[in-house]
Image (cartoon, rainbow, N blue to C red; front, side, top):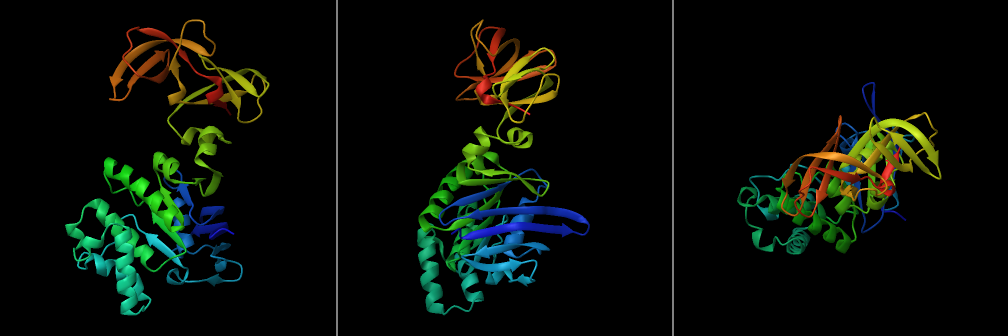
Length: 351
């Protein structure tokens, strides 16, 4: 049975419907990422699960116990839901030591001091903070402060960990390290976790399940591979990944594939929804699937190279044809000013 079950959550701010029936579930040792554009409702949904926002419809269950039911009026306060919450700002007390910050939740729940010392000591050791317990937040690095915030949430042994963009305050290198650490920790501790992020790479890397929100509605839920390789809507295909988007008219549709004439570029891809000749359509292709080709190869278009940029591991080239531009990655520099660009139909979706 899932550790966290969220069913049909509806929430309004005044007359504005912010959440319109969101549902998802998370099992022990698994991470669900709430992903979506600004204003999609992801942070509001997390705060509703935590009991910091009040929905008017739906249900939330934690470890088999119902903590919210809009129909019956059940609404347990945040501190009685068995959840740990890590805020984006970390929300550490600047005038309290690491030990006292981590102990805060336990003392709030009136745990015996011997238990406080034992649990704080244990969780600090697990998170590599054992030698820092007497320091204050200002004496810690960003990564250490993040670990203190996580330790505080883990100390009272919550069933589910909720994290609101916990890595956004870290620099790029620390963020990569923290991402791996956080995934390993949650799996090892067998916690269920929900993380809000606006970073697609973070969601793809850390999550077992991605819940993609758009306008308060779940556009698609599934594994990172599902959303990246098998998008079910134009929104999902366009939002996930670094993409090329081409609009045009369908000139052929059969065997699950459609071909679009996009004002000078013809592109063929899998139909994300049924299409017939003459209809308008939009093609989405992952930029990393584009490649330079040889003359005469299928699924290619001849384009002019406008500029090239060295990125360290790769080169990125911008190719143009009329109003269209495509960015192509290569292992090395390119000498030719014009080249056929392959837009592989297996990596294109037509909606």
